[in-house]
Length: 229
Length: 232
Image (cartoon, rainbow over all chains, first blue to last red; front, top):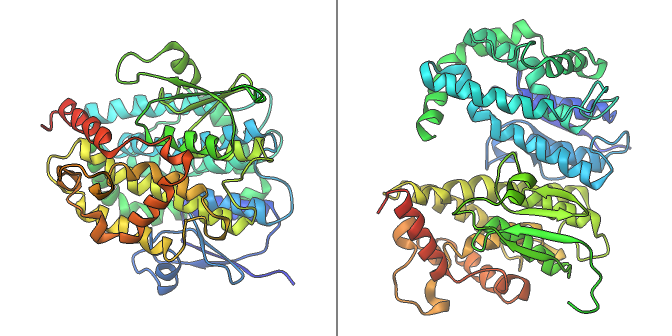
């Protein structure tokens, strides 16, 4: 009898989405527990006291696994099914490198979305340069970073496919542009159309509605990031 | 090194970098020979470094069989995978691996994240944060000899130990009491005594003592960086 898998998440989070895609690609059934991040539950605080964030994975009686990319590697190693990470060691290192790069990009992306003037323009240039670097990792003639099927790097970058459009709409800024990043835009469309992804992709309009009230918070975070640079 | 199989490893590094030190410690623990190349990153970066790491232009960079691997924790995992007959840094069990990766990531995000502010903040704004971080690490270590637990010195130990030269108690080295406490405003021995003992145990390993520099040298380096940033 398989041990139960529970995923503590919240509606509209691209990080929770990453884990759902991974679980579904591996064919692992799970129970999704939705958190209200404005009112964090004892369950979340108990299992992720260090960062107090979602997603958090609970597998049987084991202590929680936290941090989305770490959770995905855990899922890949703990469950059978198609491999999410490449088997070649060098390709694996590259997938990890570019997945980690997404984390380093987040500041310039956030500042480009939520500030204005020269600060915004400079960050937008930086962000677009980062998108170009990621775009170059798409293998020639293949739909996904993982090749013919979705892999670890597709999942790591996947937030861009859906949430970039959401944030652009809320912010009133257009950053991922077809003419500037045609391959990445094509990849984004393929990603969204994938059947497994579609099963756990939150409705775009609902996400816009849920995240729009947070715009002021996003702006203040972006300003703090810009001040630190 | 006579009689050692050339496994074709080159490490581009900078003497005081804790990220570079992680790689040096890992290679030593695994008994892997390699060519060490000191990159003077404070001056003009070499063409080789810029070619090998065009995205971040920083060390450490591992060159292996014509390929480049960057980012210290990725390098460590790569070594485990490519040299499976050497001492592993990560355990075999998937949960234990996830646990180790989480804590190494915590070191990157929190210890480095908070600690690197010492270059740019004249006052000790970060000391409260750092106390919390050290106490958290202390709790995670608990009564274990090493963070690797029953597997001994491992991934998290390698990830954290280089940072201890930046806060280690001066008692061991009998320097004058001109210490990091002034920078970090944190008396590590009071806040996290188990961590101090752990650091001393790690220093008994040749891989560590050969790779780390004394707190005094690190202190001088930090002082120089603060001057460069116009803090003093």
